Image 1 (tube, protein in one colour):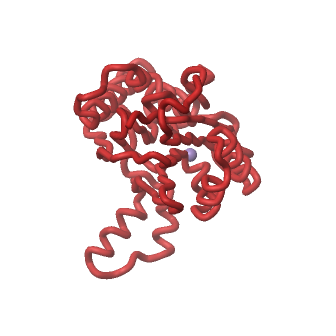
Image 2 (spheres, rainbow, N blue to C red):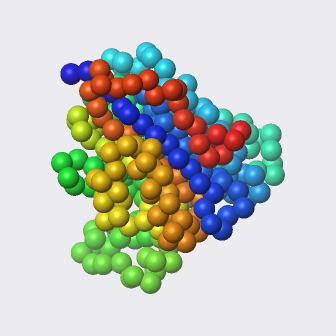
Image 3 (cartoon, helix red, strand yellow):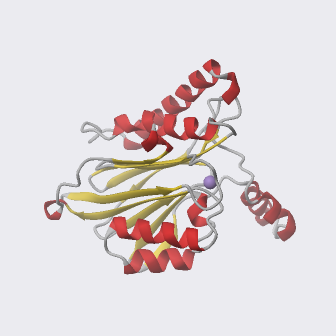
Length: 262
Ligand SMILES: [Mn+2]
């Protein structure tokens, strides 16, 4: 069957930040969210550099090849670009970014993930989180579970925003990489923690289930994040797996946040 994705991206500065360091991308073959960090202009530069670098994947030609390898190489190249920027701009030495990206070829989709942005899948009326946060509290939890115990809740809460892996132009910044099989009717959401923090999973589930139009779903989720305080930049990308012949022209890729302003 010939499938395609119907996509929408949105990004909002939120209610208390002075700039938007998130970047998002949605196109026919690629969707991605990057949440930049690092003070001054660092976060904007980091997230938009990575999204700008990955964009070249949103072009014909990946079909039939090893999607995971293609996406993995593209993430490594994006990390090299960050290295080059850092060498030129010592004032941005603390910059880094999360990245959650999906590369599509028919019903095959590769996913790359580093940091604490998230991927969700709505399938058959159920919401699944398809990425694991690279935060210290998740490491503690995994360690405690291995030893048959549970992590200290106070310690976990203190470490829930501390990332142990991001893209920052240094060595060994390996993303989690895997291949998934997309199904007709699947709906994917990629988002920054400014969305998944203030909007709980139940609400994400309800909005994704109730709102058929991807751009309306993104707008609604961003509005709820703002209504719940919007302490951080808020970015979301929704992609629906549909039958290709039923898809209108979507008017080209959507680039939002810092990468959209660049
Ligand atoms: Mn954030």
